[in-house]
Amino acid sequence: MKDSILHWRFHALRRLERKLAAPGLYRVLAPFAWWRAFRKTLFKPPDTGISVPDCVRPPSTRRSARNRLMVSYLNQYLRLFQDRLSEPKWAGRCAISGIHHLEEACQTRRGVILAFCHFGPYANLRIWLRAFGTPGAIVVGPNAEKRPRWQQFLDVRAGDSDHPTIIPLDQLREAAAILSRGIPLLIALDAERGKQMHIPFQSGWTFRMATGAMRMAVNHDAALIPCTIINRGPWRHQIELSAPVPATFLETRARWPEAGKYLLDKLMPHVKAHPAQCDRNLLNCFIRLPRETVESDSRLRA
Image 1 (cartoon, rainbow, N blue to C red):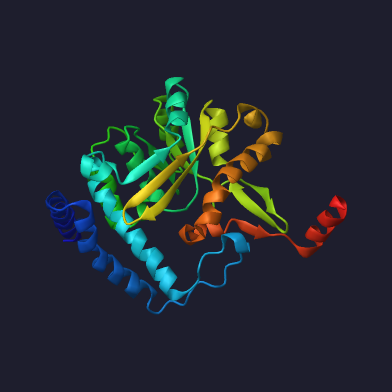
Image 2: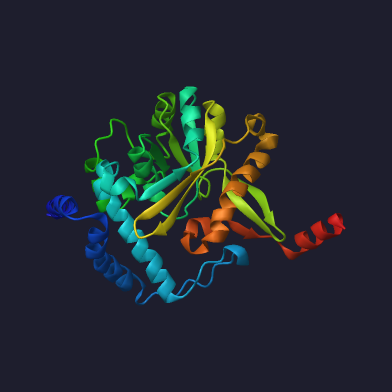
């Protein structure tokens, strides 16, 4: 019964997309997304307990939480039409900067890893990259089967990719095979699992960064490219691709903190400019140093 409902909903929304322009479709779906967000936040107090630096602190009111959730739900709808995003009605709704970094890395037949964080509409990175002619896959947690039923349904039915686009963390052989085919692989820097390292952020704070992207880049001689996607308005997105991490930063584990600092420096300007687009996964990576450590560092600098 549930599968029948999902199937009907999927095809009904795709038919509606054919009949309406993107702004009209947004206006039709926005009330449903708002209602879902309203119910989700009705009895949930604002998230004020998380400790983060002031420069990246998002608004913590119930209304701001509701708006973030509504935008997230609306961005999820784009996955219904991911195979159509290259069509004229959609193509202009996402801009991409630095695509030449990705193209140059792909032309050298090296693997390409796109290092991203849970910021902005990050779940739509791979579908927009595909719309620009670059198929991609994303590494997710080991319990991929526990993802919401609707998302699993879309993974199977939306689109016509000839390779897996969702790679569970416990199936890294598939990830290696995808890299060997020159298909970019998206890996989160703020993943909670796996090996981690701490990158100095600002006085009194560090950033806990997962090293999975670096390890994959080293093991498969892949280019490691910082990647960010930003909400610019209703179904309007901006993808930023930076120059790859210098190869010398990945030569030895002792230099990995330099690679982490490079990645963090590319990400932070966007986070500071749009703190409301930070996901909790990202915010949890900011770690306050003990006071005695900060005082010791201050004495050393003096």
